[in-house]
Image (cartoon, rainbow, N blue to C red; front, side, top):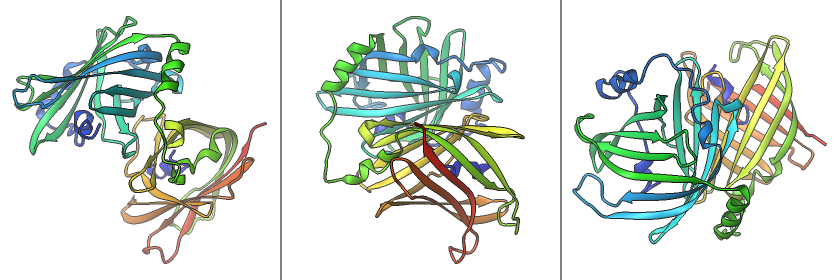
Length: 370
């Protein structure tokens, strides 16, 4: 149920298009045929385990793709990838430098056990916007992921390939195709070398960017970092006049990303009839001074869109989006209130009459674990 993604919804521009995958059309002959060729039956929930841990990375980017250019720019940096859902997802933090600037981003990879596909999402700390994913899977140790995109006003295909995944030096290439996969031009190459956690921490400390401390909004969610006990109530049938609620109990763990300008949470709650396991990703846009709140459920590994967007005022966070519920277009509001270091409260509500009235349908109370 799509509504679920509001329970605390909780991979470069210039470079953004280089990783962006705005539209993937499963019915399109090109990408669909490519995905089918990778094999229909493969339980790949641990295919990305090779990425877990700490790496030194060296990147090469073709400066002007699809122009005949042979000019490449090189980057050096580090990455750290942590496991979620016992390997059925992972989150990579990524930071590099070159002569043309600094890149700080993250990649969220989520596995769908029904389709046996991975979705690869990217966000850059410069705008905090999560792009539409590359989609694909692994076969014989090689991962291939595809999407349809627009580049310089032209519709293209984008392909990601992961290889050498059974070693400590995995290899990544991105390519563009203007002719629906007949020919490909490589424009992004990444080589990784596994390093110790101490070596990673030393380099990470040296590359922390200077923050604009005038922008206090980038730390609005710092209160939530840590481990929490969660008690949730869900209205069984929203917008129907129902007064029947279902209750869940469990835990939530939230970790800081980008020094507070993003955070990542894992939520697991249950009752006698089942459980909910999901992740939340919150990203801050320093230009708009707004947060985007994303949610994914472990049952399908799909990051829901649109995100809830908003900000905090006087210690209260309000986040909004518009979506469909049944056959109705509704407005959704998500609120964080009662914030302190020991507890906080959340509430999601729907409005089917352009905010004249709102009906709460998810209520959460969180208490910090001692």
